[in-house]
Amino acid sequence: MAPKKKSQNAASEHPLSLLKQLASKPEKLFSGAFRQQYGALCFRYNDDRAVEILLVTSRDTGRWIIPKGWPMKGKKPHEAAAVEAWEEAGVRGRGRKRAVGRYTYLKLLDDGDVAPCIVDVFEIEISKVSGKFKERGERTLAWVIPGEAARRVREIELKSLLVEFKPVGKQ
Image (spheres, helix red, strand yellow):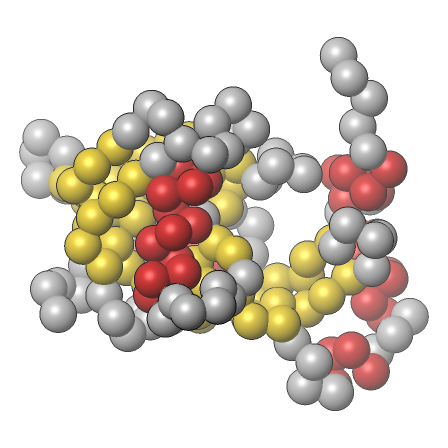
């Protein structure tokens, strides 16, 4: 088994270390310096017509998340979320142009710094699933009911979005 990077160990062995690091620089929270990301709340209907939500594991800590990433030049926010869903999970579908919600979290950056992030979340009804995608082998994927999705993620605001998720509908 290959050794983990130092930043991975810091996040997984000491979950409060991110908060401690941020507490040492409170100006990051109060300066309006939140970084923007876009997330994809990917869903489908199972054979019983019940909603299932796609979760993926993060590459660094292995925690359950939704596909998400940074803004992309030339792409609208909902388009960037759809690209992340394809790259991280190999899924495509019809998405909404307006965010269905947002959540915040602390991201451990490659340089060891911590950045508070705001994630605008876009609903995507999945119609295509591929076994070939950019981050295949780097993540685990799971289709779960909304309550289970909420149980697995750590971010409180994301839990709230997931726990009673009902698709907004076609736009």
